[in-house]
Image 1: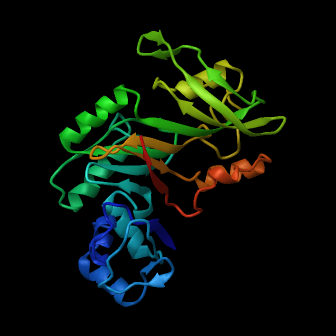
Image 2: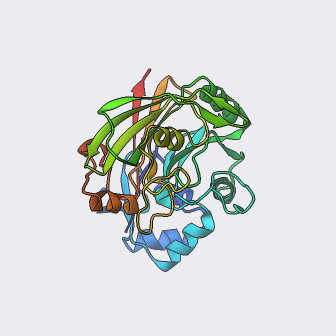
Image 3: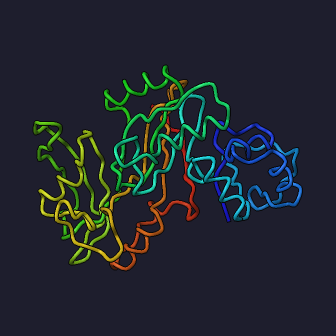
Length: 306
């Protein structure tokens, strides 16, 4: 079963138009058939073609080989679009996928997003506002068009875009604190600041939430290793290994940024990937209730005032 929530960008549109925005590679006739057969539900009820969807509505439809094919052709699967408005979209990046085009990474999130908006026949290009390491999962903010990219870039430099992470580290940390060791950035060591809070701990592992206050490459990974608590699965920085985990246990679970057309702060929350949730359980830890976002691959988004 596929599930996602209608964004404010999709809200107020006819059902078929909202589906076409999420699955842009799908022929309109195919989407029409899905609706006529009662396959598309909103908040648990089968929806009619004339339904106008509302922001926050939970849409579900049964997965199929054809839908998987269309989602792949579209670049971004429906559940991975976490948030969208007139100026921005937030996409859930899986671990193992690079954000930008680089040697050996012809398949990357930016290329997928470009294919997605091209299939929509959108009159703009999208650009990532920030980055996540290839081994880190979580939400990535994309700007729609050059003007939005410039404004979001300035907000990023002003420190007004916030990322919070979940990490599984080796050892036991204090209840809370700051990591202040300098981090290599280019050819120089530069100041870096990360705040952390312990959520759960055993004798061997600690589950942390971390707020990134500066944006250095590998900042969390390097600073935790310097403190003696390297990330589980982080071979580069000496973290404890875990069977079948090929990347560090690091997930960006919350992204906060100002909407460009209002004074509201958008808070987009992204659930811990199922594979990491299983590791957490096997390590004898559990996610606190306030971090247990909807179990399906979707996200919650809220509006807060500055």
